[in-house]
Length: 245
Image (cartoon, rainbow, N blue to C red; front, side, top):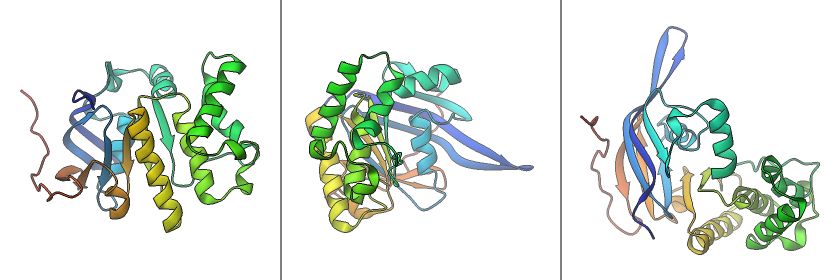
């Protein structure tokens, strides 16, 4: 695994306004994610973990600070450029799958490719490859209502990887699954990380899910407060960084 960071978050703050009140969600947060890492973000509700995930995925913008993914400084992009960047560089895995019920598994996985300049034959090749990687080649013509929760999440993962993205971001990907299905989905994510060297960022409340990652970062009140490497003692280092000079 390369040690070069694929994601670099530098002195990021994120605030929202609620009437006349300012809500500080992230405060002076810095973070590097090496290429090919499986990283879990944990913390209580309101700690900022989903906000951080959304900023790295280009779904939101920081109030201040810099976010770089690969060679791109996404925090400086226009909305239109950021939308194009997301299409090519980020695969999303959601807690409740977000599959369109009237479409087959094949058609759901194909959706992100329709935004790219690709021939029908190229789309077919990538969709069938993605479904094969998640073990659903024999279910590609089934609609979501004909699939189990675990199978629907596999379709969601196939949709996330079909564009060969730089990042896979997963928000509570096992939160709606039974224990067995959750374990299978986490096995699949680890396998994809290892076989395709994908960089995966996962938000989870579940310590068992987080333990499958290579590194766990714990957030509280908008700051990174500790780092855990599964199987090693936690480093309660208050790892937020001071602003760079």
